[in-house]
Image (tube, rainbow, N blue to C red; front, side):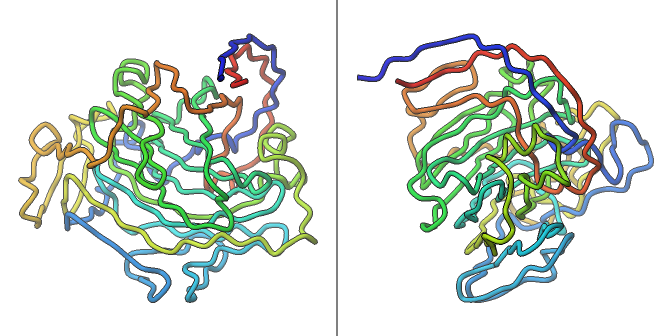
Length: 339
């Protein structure tokens, strides 16, 4: 029989700038001259990487990505490798479905990240040293005052078996699903009454990096990633087979009408899909729920029977390219153990 034991522990955590994306090409909350984001004008997009590629949609931002019958291959063979692709367009609330096999290897991090220009973020992250868990995480406006938002869930062999990792992101809630089963739900009000809730147009990023490289990352990041990476054990490869996106607010572009970073400030322009009416988010919400039960989902304020571990650090895709500035923080965190 499972029993939950809540213990307060004192953790001395070394945190680096890799814990969350902390820069943007143009942050609309601090810059009034940012260009509008290109939008996904259709209500849906899908790609099967096992049979095709799409250079019009996907931009390679680091390294090289190969496309084979196994899918899009993200491979690390040496220090500095961090193959990454991202969509050329943004979406504004919707469903993001990614079928993948995570990479093995101590310290290797496979990542699926949604991120906005003002640093809202929704993550899936997989640590190569543990094939039985996946991490869910989120950030709002780049707020890194705490690193207690990451929650791990069990998955059946994430490295040898392909699984469907889906996020439904609406203005009211965000739910993470594994193979159609709801694992976690974050409600708008539970994220600092909405202040930390991801709510601005985001693009999708897929990639892999070595969080366990002690020459490129802080001690805290290496510890979070599961230990030091030995490149002689490689190569380390993540395979992404398919991606499907449903955009609840299709539009040719998304622009910020002010610097609040609030969902109500987003203007949807040049909408071409019949499901979109244009205008701001109060007029086009598109919050149709997935046809799966959510009773078993863990909300951000409750405790589910599912195993969860609150971590003190979470590394985000592409942040390894930022400088590894090490911060020393003394953090007291509640950790829930399932016995």
